[in-house]
Image (cartoon, rainbow, N blue to C red; front, side, top):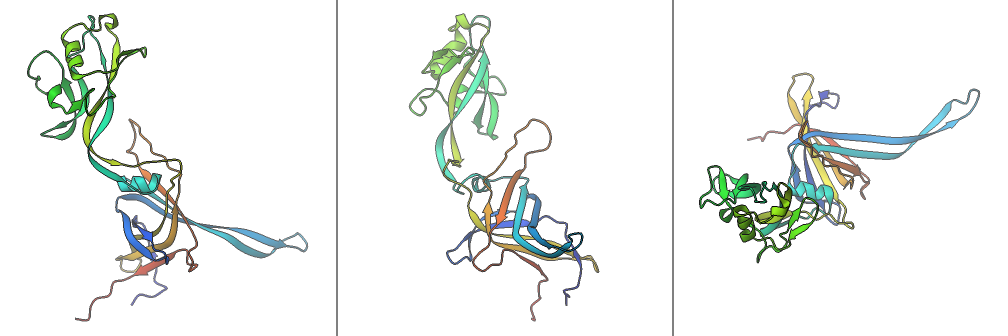
Length: 296
């Protein structure tokens, strides 16, 4: 039988679960499970005030107050759900057949023709979503490694996407209704001879299945019942036993940073929680436990 004086070490990161909070303060349905964390940290702080007096004005009595508990979580990966909890109200809208807008940049040749291809994110029947060369040259078949514009799923100005525009590098709008026929014609002849050798930008759309997170000025991250499960290792036999922290009421911080960079380590995703005092008064519980076997 384990003793309360047995000693343990803790090293492993925790798996953390977020639950909705019911009206009576009990945990409701789980809304997020994180098992790819890099760091999970619990920090407790408090303030002090002292009574001083006598020769040398030493401390006589100390009072503690203003206890604060914070939890910091660093995740190696993200999901639409974790991102929505970090940035807003936790809602994710899933939809199919949505058109997502992009912009491509190409340089016209020295006569004002479009190049034979541009690079875009398209759907490839073999590889799924892929970044590929979209062929707009004059041949009827795309060269190896390219996909025909007609087969790319790209929508220029038309019934599903009316935002296509062709803009010169100086910001001049060259065509406010840039269509597939226009881009093919520009690849076949020097339509933009006055812009020879310059870069141009054009917008297009691709059909996609989307998970949308709306971050608005009047929505903020919520409050959750949170548990974290990790291991505590015995200093006697070196075996791992279970260790769990339970936070009945934790407010997600609204301050978030997402880093996108070309070099260095991959981005991590941080969640900072402030522990609030629930109606019961128990701000956090730490449970070290050993599973019991059945009698039979």
